[in-house]
Length: 142
Image (cartoon, rainbow, N blue to C red):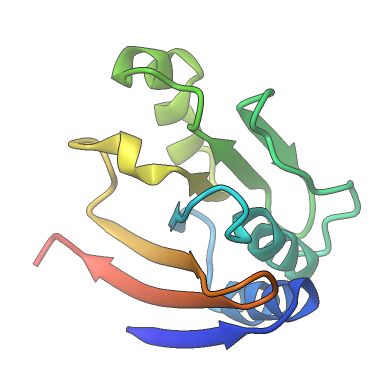
């Protein structure tokens, strides 16, 4: 596990860009953290690495934002999802097989269906401008 301290939104975006260099089509990234922890800022960095031109924002109300760059990026926010039926109702399993990168906020709602192989990004609020970002790769197949 790698742990980083970000002192600004710009640093969080930069960390997302750096992290994205290891992602490939089919990569799954589970994002954890309270509201305001910086998950969407991190996603902005990932998208910037893949040359996404659209405005990147939180899909809290739209549930899924699809971005087009060198590789498709699917930014999914499960905050408003009540159960697995709703998650499958948005086509969750189709996004997993779409050949892009899946970035899922509130991934704890995927209990029992989270992909075995994934990156986990856990973001914590330290103070108003400081965030702790812990990144790990999980390979549950072994």
